Every structure is written in structure tokens, then in C-alpha cells.
Length: 206
Image 1: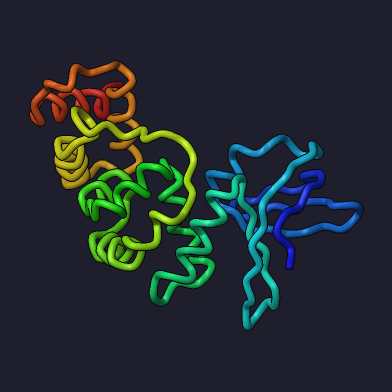
Image 2 (image 1 turned 180 degrees about the vertical axis):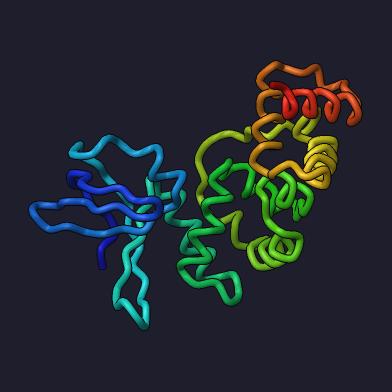
């Protein structure tokens, strides 16, 4: 079983890469956001690898930047009902916003955080929380929590996010605007209406 590869990156697509290892090209499926952050082509790269069997394509390889990501991907496949490799990779792409915070949200069964911050549907968030609650704590995830408990990372964030999406703004647009506000170091004492007004101003500017 292939668990790790090191070689030169020779091709990058939206959801896969090809790694040249001693003259052999290995194609690995990856999260698009991970691919965006990889080294330039022809540079050496190391990836953790998970194998999956497909009834159509045989053995399919999945690549990960860290052991944390690989471990979570494999946990999605083994612990969450009706979750194959492709869906597990989709789940991982959302959890990658902050693996420590995702682990914390699962442990606390924080459905609002899973839907509002990570972008899971309510049904999927419930499924993940129920399937992983007693298993995520055994998974070694490195790094510190990033999402604030108070201020823009709290329920106010979720309320503003949902309000702006209901007005027709795209999820990614809203999250970008809210992230911009967070970078401006809000005091945390702002009311939901204040955050909504400031975010709306950013979204409609220009």
C-alpha cells in the first residue's frame, strides 16, 4: 500500500495532480484548495497518500499535505455512513478551513458552527456530528483554534451570514466580506445589526 510519495510536481488540475517519482507518474486526487497552495510545477513535493478502490477505475490515489488531513479523510470514509472517497474529499475540503475548529465543533456537536462557518448543510452537519463525536477525539489534529467564540465567530456571524445569503449574495462573497471585517479587529461588542451593516457596505461597495 502506498502511504507517502515524494517527487516532482509535473501537472496540476482543478482536483488532481501528477507527481513524477523516479520516472513514474502518479495521479493523485486532492482538494482544490490544497492544490492551489502547492509548489510551482517541476519542484519537489511530498504528499501523504491514501488508496481507494473504484469499481470503474481500479485503485485511485488521494493526496494530502499533512497526516492530519489524511487521517480525517480516512475517518470520514470509515465512520460516516454512505461516504465514499469522493464525498470524504468534499467533506475534508470544508473542514480544512480549520481542522482544530472542525474537531472542536464535532466534539461539542455545534451544528451552527458546522453550517455557518464550514458550509455543511444542516442534514450533513447532524450526520457528521452523530457519526464522529466519539471518534474525532482520538484523531491527532495539530494547530490552535482559529474561530473566535465571541464577536464575529459567534452566533452573530452565523446570523449575518444567513441574512446576507437570503438577500441573494453568494456564500463565498459573504464569507470574504466577514473575513475582511475580522481582519479589521472588531471589538466583539458589535451587535448583529452592526456587523450586518458593515458587511453589506463591503458587499455593495464599488
